[in-house]
Amino acid sequence: MSCTLVLGGARSGKSGYAEQLAHASGKEVVVVATARAGDAEMAARIAQHRGRRPAHWRTVEEELALASVLRAHCAPGRLVLVDCLTLWLSNLLFCDGRIWPEVGEVALPERFHQERAALLDLLDAGTEGEIVLVSNEVGMGIVPWGAVSRCFADEAGWLNQAVAACADRAVLVAAGLPLVLKGDAC
Image (cartoon, rainbow, N blue to C red):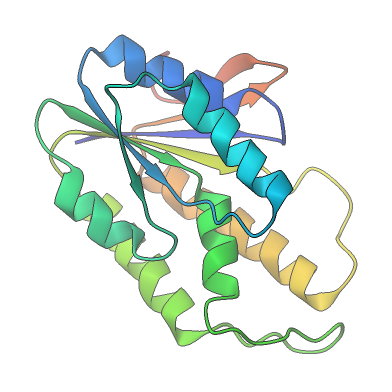
């Protein structure tokens, strides 16, 4: 297995860069889309991402069970592009429908722990084929206001660190420009 983590801020070009990697691979591409269209603006963002992908790429939508989908779709001669880990993380934080407190302790849903562990176990063990994982780098700004926002920033940072440790390559994209952090240039 080959695994690449592509990090960047909002509108940094990380998804476009990951799509370039997928196209350049010459492999069959399966896109795992983790976004949830909760409103019209998010639906438009999802449509924009769909619209720029080649029609022959297969898309699988999965909001929570990412490791299971990767197990099902990773194969020799195939590249699986996951866009994106931070939306998946958000989905897991709110998967049980709870209302989060403004202040105080944040108790993560049990499914959050299960799905995160399953993903990291799969990446650590390896799979057949190639995986490209897109994630937001959220730790370069100020500490967020509110317990749930701080929890999200913490969990996103820890997830990115854990995935980068498992990955063969890690690339930071800023202003559309890739900077290789780990491994060979892509």
